[in-house]
Length: 387
Image (tube, rainbow, N blue to C red; front, side):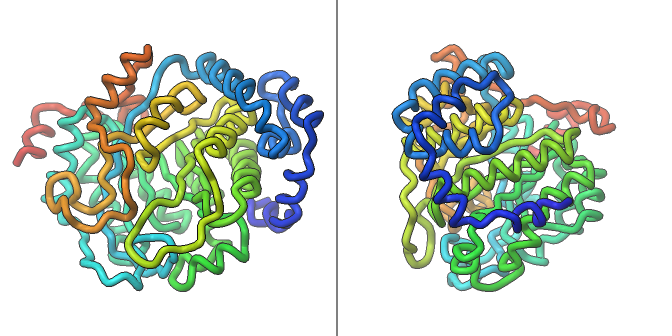
């Protein structure tokens, strides 16, 4: 059964109402469950207003479970934006096709220049990001992966949803991780915010993790863009999606991200309240639901918040991010997809982590696992990046 079939069985409004109806006793029961045994009703209780009074207890459990599974480590990563060209009209994104901005698709030399900056900071993995357009389809992405494969141990991607055979072909080029955020699981809100373009097809996007799982992707990333609809219900549906992926595609690792709406090019839109305390509650609830999934926090959040969030169950954080194509070296002033809040350099972020007893991890995957020999940063690779 695909996740689309599962999603259709649940009404978004009814889920939101069920979460609001959870009681302190429901929360107490969820918190008393043995590690790894929570069900989706327990998850609903932990997302409910009734759980806010137990947030400290949730945070302590989340911290403990994360240390037991991942240790005192934090993987650091940065996005490399290949393009801001996009065929979609979305109300909340600076890359939206209706915004009159300069569009850019990086050339091979520009990609290597950007990669050279990231390698100089120590990153062993790179997250490739694009807008959704045929200009950066499978052929362009395959070429980009081949170009970057000698320089990075991990190649990740956050691009438009693709066909299963496309994902399988990109995996052959070294792609190991794909992040695909549903934005919102609320069909009405989805239609309000995705006005035209391929992204308007909500069900095709919903089925993307299934296609990734069938293609054998090694890690599948999920998430909602909190602020588009009721955050508690969107978090619950993300948990439902996570359980589906963990069960159906158990060979793949999973991750969950917690992006919040940030300032962007274009008109402002009404935002559903999702504050820092809400983000903490959501993250801790996910850690208690799944002790294996990786939890990620981006530079959308402030340095003050991220410093405190280190101990809440997160296992990866972006650092030194630029959200525009060419933002590291080629064209630093081009339009960002959204505004970054934590502007610390990767070195500053790593120093902070060490100061609180955590080990910054720049690489947690080796290309030999994927059948590719050599090691990133070898003299030939460094020479190509410097040229």
